[in-house]
Image (cartoon, rainbow, N blue to C red; front, side):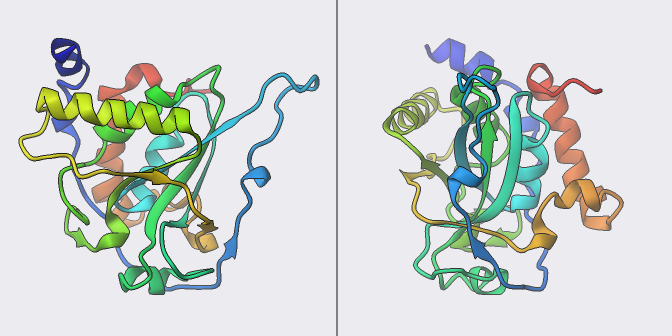
Length: 225
């Protein structure tokens, strides 16, 4: 098992870990999962599933998971805190307890939760407590917010196996907890990289991460149309 894990993750250290810049805040609204979990088959036989990950800046996380085959939608938002309807400014203060996360709606017939976990752990540093790159604070923590017991068990199993394989020199500090209320981030955070590719932060930080993601996880990439 250790040998297999090492083989699967041998290229993970090629990922560059950065976090995202500050933006102005605006009002947000609470989201219902049913808004994004919809039937994709007229006979009601194919149902989408949902995963929620925190791995530093949600611009970077969104840009990566949007390119994974089988992912239908990625929504940036906040969860895990105490305040209702938090704004970006409030979350960035570190006082609300919320994490920046991406809620990923996916077709389990095309991509498994296991595959998403592999991308999750391979595209950020899960050993830095409340920190990714130069950004520090609980809002940037590594976290898996599971939606059911199957996700919980699989996430804990993978974390245990990765820890035992010593993929990283330092312990994995990824939080694994049940999903509480999820709040959609401000409109300007949604689809950020795709709409601002030429912006300096995107060019110098997110684009290199995505290019390295393509090299490591090419088999999981969406086919270009």
